[in-house]
Image (cartoon, rainbow, N blue to C red; front, side, top):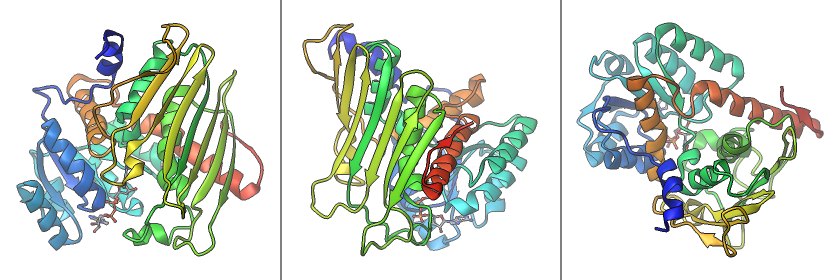
Length: 359
Ligand SMILES: NC(=O)c1ccc[n+]([C@@H]2O[C@H](COP(=O)([O-])OP(=O)(O)OC[C@H]3O[C@@H](n4cnc5c(N)ncnc54)[C@H](O)[C@@H]3O)[C@@H](O)[C@H]2O)c1
């Protein structure tokens, strides 16, 4: 690797430091636990002690395939296991807040899935409960740890493109929602369950916007009840702007998933490899063109890890560091309230047909 990339690669570290192994139990044995959580935890050396799913047969099958030693008969049995320090909740989102409440009351630290909560008030209540009990909550917005995105953020932070002025995600793919009946029926779909990742990644680079506009749409003949095409515009204090344009009804077999950050002294551009062949994907690509380094045109950064499964170790490793050493996990539930607020404001804008402030 070129020496110049060494600090960027170091900033993308997702390893679980030795000695910080805190036993984990997983609630839910659905699609994402199977393809992402358990494979990434195994590679990272995270000890998964057991799991529980309402569908006991599914739980047994997934546990056996991934070498998870215990299948708990009930949620209470999981929460009563004194060895378990962290509960990773990965169920249909409507069930998450109540499981989170009970797990906190049982003294467990939490890794919650996106969307963390249906509204900010529920989020604040869970954060206050965790604070009172001295427990930590991380939210698994792992696109922040996808190597292409993490490296791009590190390049911005290192000043390689000067002052960032624009961040754009352009995603045009064919998404089969049919394996998730709870998603297919939902009248909130694209922003709430997919673009939430891009919006959170934008926040990780540019902070919180002050004004947003969102237009959502559907495609004739689509399966899902909710919006499958969205265009979100974010205006930040100062010069920075962001655009997230996502559509899931690509009928032409030419997927694209592009990210770009422009700045006063250069730009970063890349692709999200996962979305070219979900869930296997391919490596991200990333290039930087910098007047401050300087580079001679576009310089490729060698991405070596994938969004699925690798990036899923990031939030868990960060939570473990916060539990062992203090401080906040990245991203914490408190940080994630900004993403929840942003999603809420974008839907408010979509419904109203005009821009909305984000307090
Ligand atoms: N990249 C990502 O961050 C990412 C990707 C996909 C899904 N997710 C999130 O992960 C969560 C799970 O998604 P999935 O794709 O695995 O869904 P899924 O429908 O495939 O699986 C959900 C599982 O949860 C179980 N379940 C439901 N309610 C339960 C309860 N009260 N107690 C125990 N088990 C329960 C179901 O039986 C099912 O096996 C969702 O919140 C989703 O938004 C995140």
